[in-house]
Length: 248
Image (tube, rainbow, N blue to C red; front, side, top):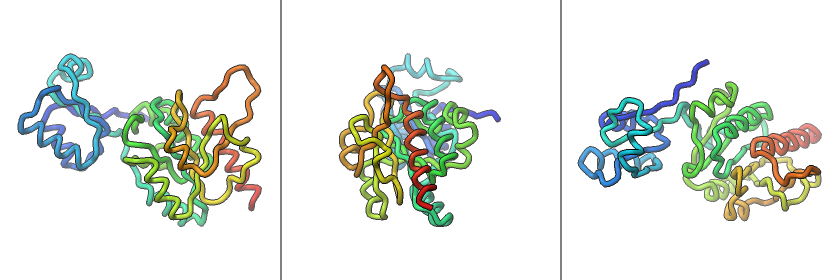
């Protein structure tokens, strides 16, 4: 299967993409350009809360595929995003407690793709990512997911903490992977749960961590002090699976 990265160049093409409802992950605009068409594009971008980067002409020339960018280039999602409500509905339809995976600023597309693959196999109902400082549904993510992107929805939210608070009102509780937490084997990870995995380098952010109900650590006995984010997500996901199976 061939996955296409959607790069849209030129003012009319970018504006039409916004108006057609296509999800634009990132927008690059020539620094200092504020004419009518650009202002219209910026208005449309605000409706989607699209990340806007004002860059020098050299940067636009570098990422342009056509050489005719007219001062604006957009990156569109290779796949459509889902919604958090869709994920909760899927859990209800299956008669299962919701199992969501929340990713705090995962920037490596291979990690996101691998986590998508694990989420699908572990029976998670979806993945939630923030709109900013995180990789979106690119072609690299799709390829790394080995097809899981077609079955496991990914929702993009403006504020992870706010989303977690809203989900708590619907009965979910949250556990994050943290080296300083209690060992995962000593925790009760059953029920409606959200598993939070942090950035490849800095881990789970402070505010997100404070919103979690529990912190779970993975026992490690080697000479290095951390695991790849996608590996950690896999280990913790399957501890949740193990406990759910044991509960039945």
